[in-house]
Length: 202
Length: 160
Image (cartoon, rainbow over the protein chains, first blue to last red):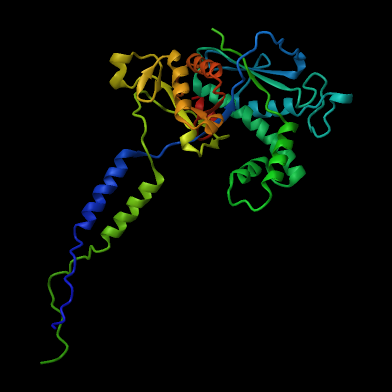
């Protein structure tokens, strides 16, 4: 028997095939941006239920007019100042007695919110307001809540709220998820997101 | 007659392209893994606003997308220049949202329905009136979990 070596397969066209596939995938696909601000809409209004009466000082009015100008408590404000203003309002803790807030670090001014549980941010916008401006304001308000939640979470559990939320989603998390869930709920109770949106005005 | 032949001088040896397929395959796999199939052909302009307080949407099959924005220049003649809603591959009216959500729900398994999220991919220049109308429809049909899809970036970049 003659020892013949197997003939080598010509692999020269493999590159062409791979290029073809590569170009196909390049053209048909997009790297999607699937990140965003998650919000929960309020359920449809029940006409028979009276809206609860809120004290004026517990409402933080943020208004966007049709020229995308920001009005906070009827005074014009720059977007960069909104986060700090919202934090100051939420963290004020001006209440006394039953309404006192033990963990608030604010100024405790009697003319601002009683405690974070009562504090409501009311966002009003015009029909002509641009979506980008609206998102910018939403972002700042969510950031204000996150900032406060992070602070409390660092104090109580030694890690930030955003980190806890990430760990909850992480399948490889080693600790107890039930405990983590309770901790997250605890922080959310301390600073509940009370963001009310009025129907846009004409 | 030496055993050590002198190397042939003159022409350069050809560059070996044997590893080219490997390189291309590597690129190919990267693109296959990192990308998602385009589901909808956008008929509208879709420059998303920026935000940094974002969450990732990870369960793709539990997300329904509502697009809105000005029709792109190709469709401006037939669809006008006012901002429009796009559902799947078609321009839609505000009243089409309810049937769309119900159809999406019907296509999912029952236990998945409470976890459905509506992602709003709205162009930054759209007026809030249209977005408000969309949100009103979603509220009425009890699709309360929404996500404003954004790009990563500082929010102050939106007001320019």
